Length: 304
Image 1: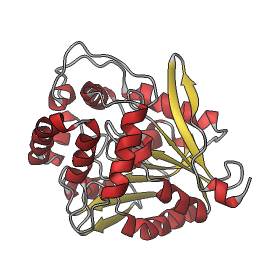
Image 2 (image 1 turned 90 degrees about the vertical axis):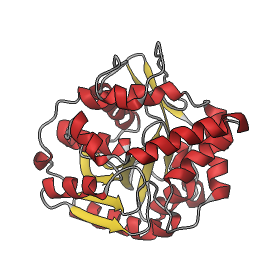
Image 3 (image 1 turned 30 degrees about the horizontal axis):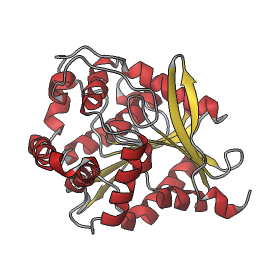
């Protein structure tokens, strides 16, 4: 296979955790490059990890796997009897369709499917919590861990609420209602815009492409967010001080959703963790920062 072909995503494949199918794509040489698993956040599909970001990671010596969490994209979806606010799900007001452990089992199924006994793990937003949980509950599968734009997975529901900016959630809800008539692709673009980094140009063209692919693969189900959020209260984990792999914590100082104190607390609790605070960065990883982030990932891999 040519080097250029490694920079493009593979065909969609599926890992299996019992009756649950998890869709994934790969970049790079899975047998010889440094293995890196990307875990996406709440209700976002794997295509929101930009192809070009994955290609640059391949150029830096990584093999990359991205996947759709259960209840998202091309992976197995579940159902809810009624639609509830994610806050209510976090606090126990809804019945969980699955657990955090189920989602960790999904991740292990993906690792097994690509033949990786362990990998470097980068998680964003909800994916940051899953990356932390994997390092705590399945330490043999994690070589190093990056937590980006997420709260401590061990915080508990009430403490987690203190890390959130409720104004952003209200604005997102209002945006959804206002744009409902403009179509689902436009809604996805505007949700991404609301989360983006005010100190950097908004990638309008790419966001619209990602939103179009995302909607074409699987139209957004608003109830999946409440089901995924409900898993946060199901984790039973040791403290973050028991993470024993090299760790990097990425914080956007202008994150409209998660307070910077969340990342600081994660870095404070994990022995030897490196904290990177990025001014002007929101709840996304701007393309202008990819070279710096990739250098950090290389340094982390070297430590591992």
